Image (spheres, rainbow, N blue to C red):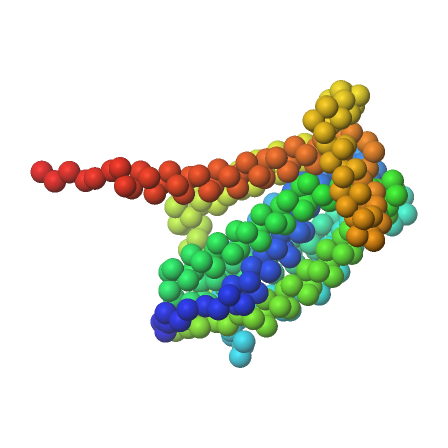
Amino acid sequence: MKSTAQKLSVLEKLGYSLGDLAANLIFQTLMTFLAYFYTDVYKIPAGTASIIIFIGGFFGAFFNIIMGAIADRTNTRWGKFRPWVLWTSIPFGVISLLAFSTPNFSETGKVAYAFITYFLLVIIYSANNLPYSALSGVITGDMKQRNSLSSYRFVAVMIAQFIIQSLLLPLALSLGHGDKAVGFEKVMLFFAITGVIFFIITFLTTRERILPAQEEKSSVLTDLKDLSKNKPWLIMLALTILVFITLALKGGMYIYYFKYYLNEAAQAAFLENIGFNNFIAGVNNMLTGIGLGNFEWPKDAPTSANSLFNAGGIICMILGIFFSKQIRTGAGVLYKPRHF
């Protein structure tokens, strides 16, 4: 293996992180709002929507294994993994937009359309994100630089998570002027265009510098058989599936909880009492003061309460990560190994 300790430029780190920001604009939307979109926007029965999501997600997990074998066997003048970021950029954007569009079909047609577009989306997501994730391991052999690269990537993920969980639904209602279907299409069109641009930037600004040693070639089927006998890998696979099920259940249920289980009047009163409405009014005053138009924040309390709740959770997560680093550093100073 050819290794290099070359220091990565800020431009390359930023370029790489934009790929994760682009992917997470879609991934976070899937995790947080896909079920809500199917049931409350596209009007698919909840039981049917859950089956679509389950089957599509299960297939996506299996396709990741196949995609890993395909990417590992890719050899181009651009490398193994970078080309996939480029090749999948436009299809990713197009399919993301189609998956959150609402063509006027019959109920059966809607179910078929949702299943096909979601099925295609999980395939293109795997084809894009798995090589993208592997790319960080071949950009540099310097572990410090890899850690720095991961830090940039983490910030990008947090930005995407904040945008989706805190602002997507208000933006959809605002841009659609109350029509959630129109609003979702407008927001996803913006995300799709942004994602394509960011993926291309990632491709252009990164380089694969680590060349894996040539090993004995094996078929994809042989690799799958080997994996099926690898108990630690099977345990990690099961754990990963359970983690993603938990994330999907938790993230996807919040909007239903605020809309259908909490009292809307009580939520409205809470937002008024904590000054949230005054904050939005202040933002609009600032925007109009510099010559811009008002930000049309939705009037329904559940949307605002859900967005505020998600924003608070993300901020607490960031603070927790920051303080955990300080705790680890402090513990390292306080702990002194004893020699006997």
